[in-house]
Image (cartoon, rainbow, N blue to C red; front, side, top):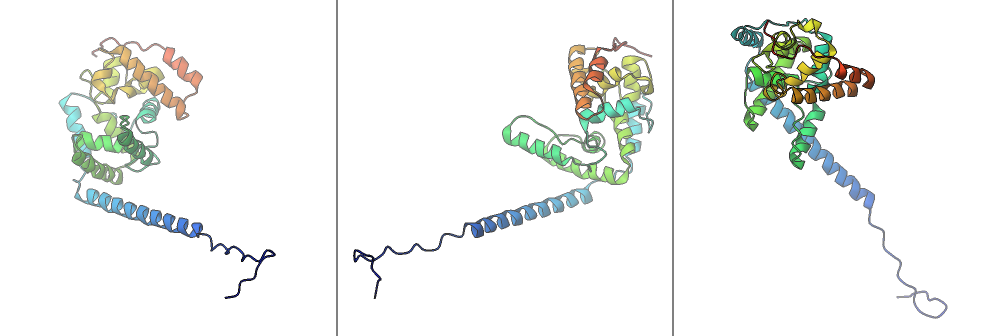
Length: 261
């Protein structure tokens, strides 16, 4: 075979072959990721539909809440939810309540990350999920939590957001024997919920996460720490300015001492 030579008579170096087609490989990798993601989404959708279909009917939720209130001689707030109470509760418990379905995608992502990193983040417990746990599926096992998801979506389909919030505030335990926001408001501050100050409402909203631990009659220091968190969340969600939160924090809480009216 003939090889053209260079000036010194030596054959030229062979030409390099074609470069690897990296772009094509990258496209194939992204395609596999997209297919796997779609398969995961489909599987989760099928699981969710199964949970909803097999969940109990939730039409009796108001009757269950009424039974809780009757058992403790507590009145209902109904749909007359004061704005201070609503804003304080949602800021700390479910800030995207009116825009998200029964699950908070960001909260679920935080919860999954918390499991991976072992940092104890238990985000994702929406108002609907908490109400499902209160009324229909108590417990914290994985199986019970899955059932709570199905019930939460049924609640979201059956009732308006305002109705669900009212049921939650009626069914929630606020510590020291106080059930529901009306009884808690009277018990701790001697006023109806509509007359609560920002300071009082923000303290009550903080109690539902751990009502025994944060009971202001027995653990006022911890209750105040929790109230500070609620106020910080109200600032973060744009309901209050930092200056307003500071003034609310400094406002009197009387009567935090036991009040039995």
